[in-house]
Image (cartoon, rainbow, N blue to C red; front, side, top):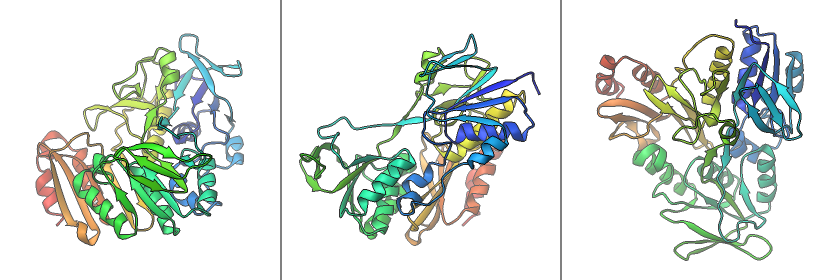
Length: 403
């Protein structure tokens, strides 16, 4: 273990929390300070669009408050960082307090993308990022009848399913032709679209929201085509952007995705500063290119890798990205890989029966796989994705054997 005495973890998400946990697991006995602008200690975000919308008592905390103190990890909530002086190795908080460090981790996550359109400040419009957001939506939805979801990706789809399962009438308005199509392609898009429609969700595709209607409170949504959709609430899920403001101000290199550019060991352009989670754009040895992944399980894995490397392990982050999404209790989609583009989708199983796997190929090479109900296929997908070039040529043959 290298001569590192003080580590600053900047960010209150799972990446920073996992890094802290791994440092203590490895026997690091120096000072660990976790700095977050959040009101609470680190928590899990996936339940915000699912379990918390129906169960206010659902536990989202990464660990108990006693756990942090028992492991001698200082967690400073409501402690936003305003500056990082990488030369002097000093963190400055917005309250002007400073903290010296030997190694630092930037795990500032991503910021919700907000719509700047007419009526966007009306009460009744929701963005989901924190447990408090979920609690407020749940309380207001309890007395609502109609809800409009804006967007065709994870948040809109998950919330539409959660609210429909609770008896609300939901309309989903999106630019895409099919739900989740941009991320997973037409096969999965068709499956999800038909699933939601069968359960009663109205879907309006190829449409932009031009305005939120209402005088004192939200009363409806108007599309760019002029359609007016009455509603009591709206939930906006139109993506997120990496929160790289601190890194940019510190003079660290920013990647093409807008995240903090890192090498394969999650080290930034300064050797004593690392990055992990949604803000991290790293060189993936598994994919042979720079990659930025916005999913909790991968953020946790990156927190572990960064922790190991801050104390001298010198380990590449070779994790194959994995994530899952629950669409109420109607479907669970699981995905491995990080397909930026592909030219062929090989389907095994039956989307019509709801048990299938989509294998994404690019030039005959497997780049990702998604399944609903065939989790064992993902083990094969991982083995192909991490195999050498000669083995990858056999991908189609191996896939064919799954039936």
